[in-house]
Length: 91
Length: 193
Image 1 (tube, rainbow over the protein chains, first blue to last red):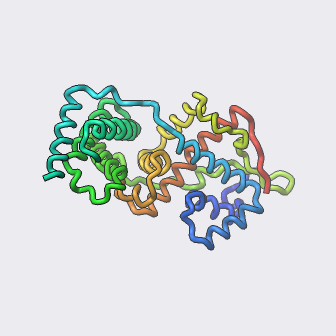
Image 2: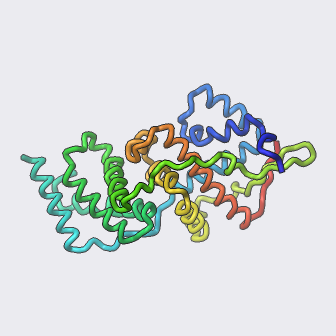
Image 3: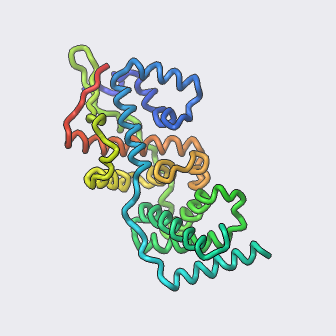
């Protein structure tokens, strides 16, 4: 197993900026530098792909828990506030 | 929001579910999440005139929800804590025959439909659920609700740089859990440099 200091400094730099890269939040020059590195580094390609798929899965994620049906009293409370809001807006 | 009962019901149904799910994941209690959802919608109707940009209603609602969560917990579940080191998320590497090898699962065969499989969904549920609160709140806003970095910073009252830092660590932590699951389910692919 490699010690941390043995890892490629470039790989580590890339690793730290990967989310910003995937979010297209990196400046153009940093983006080009990263793409140049990734294109020649198989582990970085694999890692980038795995992180990209993680983000895709998170974006499709829908929590299973749903609230209980809205009770009559709670709905009336909300409807009252809504009507008051609408009355204010049309004054 | 149009002034009719249909608009009211659609607005309530949509945001009540969204706020409930966010609060449930942050507070961990169904009863608290139900109350946060109700309090958030009430507050939204009562202070709708404060919404300056109607197209930004989602971050506005989530900011109210986040504050309602804080009130519910009576302490900040979003309190700053030490950021986790990136080294904690680096996959294992080894040197073999002069090459550096990365131990990583084979993600290439992960079909989109896989998401529908309950096992992977369960792993993702657990991975997100177990994130430190500071990271979970950012990931829920950025990746699940797909708010922008700027909107997330506004909702959570953080700087954009902190949002970026925490989002990256949250993603790495979730990736690590999914990778462990995929390695146990389908073996390991070794990338070489």
